[in-house]
Image 1 (cartoon, rainbow, N blue to C red):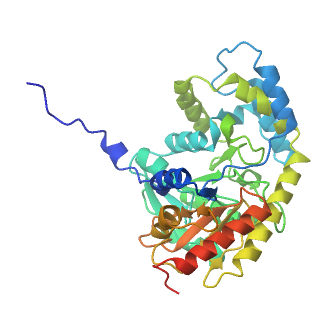
Image 2 (image 1 turned 60 degrees about the vertical axis):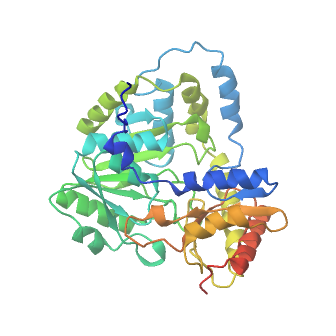
Image 3 (image 1 turned 30 degrees about the vertical axis):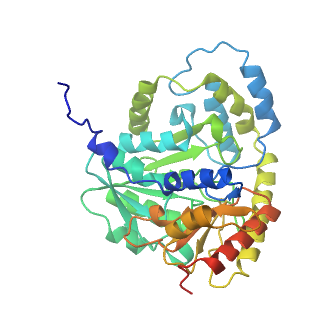
Length: 402
């Protein structure tokens, strides 16, 4: 007789928060099989082409020997990151940069290098949804901090009030995914001062650094004085160069002990792909005018989407200062139910839209239940049509509340 014991995965895996996108993906596929065209506003997968130099470098690099790269990253790629920061007016040395498999690995390494299981991390809401899973897998407690007006940076007093003996770090994102909020120098300085006084790390996700629509450029925590031991920057090339599939990011810190720990952890995965690293080195060294054109394209998309949303009764759209998302509050009983209904039961002239429900972008119970995130990954005309479809859906949705 065989053993009938049911083997279960680890508690760590079972306790990871579910992704609403995974739940909606089968509904989107079913809609396509019914012949309904789905406009995807649910994922930050840019539709813009990468710089020509990246494609040319890919061709050259593909003919090179596929050997192991150093765990820190190829010297060309490390120096490319240093040159990139230099163009931002930020001086960093090669031994202060670690090339990573995108921002996700950079954050993962940063968390493992700075915090121990049971520690707490303060995270302003709304936050990039995978933060919850990354912190949970690392055994860390996510402590949510309510946003300021317009989903902006939190009041410094709200951050300070949540510091306990178990607090190890503050994790922020600017410009923010999903809200598009840009932390100005005053807000960053206040967070940095708290980190310095309380002995915390300041983990700053700066993936969308250049994508700022209004006002001055986004400030990096690397520019703030007195945070050499506290600041850790998580960065990625996916969005500024439209190369999500290359998976190249970086972790940058002047704290040598943290960098040494992160490098030890990175050595466990041996190396990153040589071809991918060589492909982006040239773009890092000379990001403009390409990045300026990307920002102009997203600014036009933001303005077109906001104009269209302003005509939809009962809808409240938050104006993003950067990144390429818009958070929208809808007059519905439940945004997840509405997003599923659009895919499973609704079409408008043969089309529907796939939205991202916002519940998983908050840790506070009940927050975000009537909000969705729209990713500006289509041109203005398509975005306008998507909003028209969403408006028609709202008019027909049986769970509309207002």
